[in-house]
Length: 138
Image 1 (cartoon, one colour):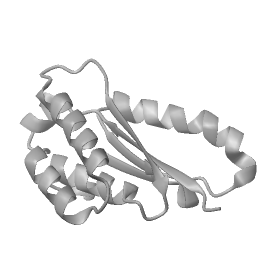
Image 2 (cartoon, one colour):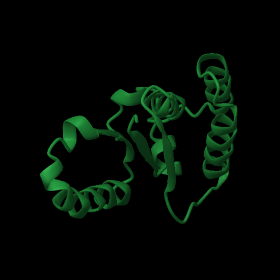
Image 3 (tube, one colour):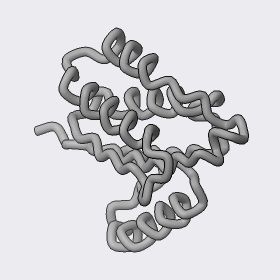
């Protein structure tokens, strides 16, 4: 049986980050790119695009947008998060507002799961409180 994976995307978009020229929000471009390049995930595409659009259109969001993407290896979780960041930032995944966590790299030791469970939420909290965007994969 293949292992199931998840990807967590935390988007702390703010008007300030857009005003300062970090953002290049293109929700329609995101939908077009995902529809063209991500196969068999039409429901996920609609949910991701709708959630992002609603979050971006909120002039003063009270909390971060959190997207938890689940699926088998190769189902498009990382691909989708990369497109999300490209739709938000001029520098895409290279933006200083983006942090990418990959389980095999950042959480490699199965014996340290309890430590990771304590530390990862603290890391995500500190990032979201500082207006960073997080893309993480398991």
